[in-house]
Image (cartoon, rainbow, N blue to C red; front, side):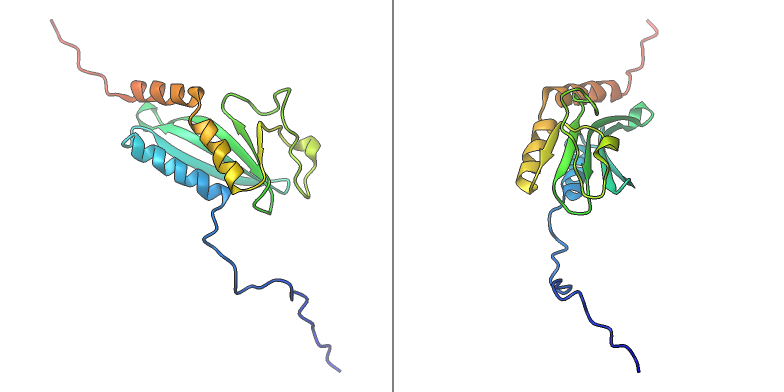
Length: 159
């Protein structure tokens, strides 16, 4: 007699997923694209994501193509399999600084995780946190410095 397999996924509606949901990585990617447009390509925003120990690590870089593709890490984000919470560390607060927030994600060992500067429990909190980092004095200083250094040198006069 054949065993009848039951569908145990009854609580999940596979036909009703909103793949257009704003996600933390999409937010960073859109801001990276805007940096490139705002600086007319003098600087580029890039993101990079990798997984390790049941967590996603996403870095936001400012890249200066004219400076041998110099990259400055502006912020890092750590998240789990669910969209939230996400933990962020900005440029001016390096990972594992003494007053950091402990990263607590299901399936991870918090002793092995970096400390964070910020935690966001929903999209609005994340958007506000990213805005704080992007509009900080430190970020403005980095952008101005890299843009200045990226300008082509004028030829010197022989006289």
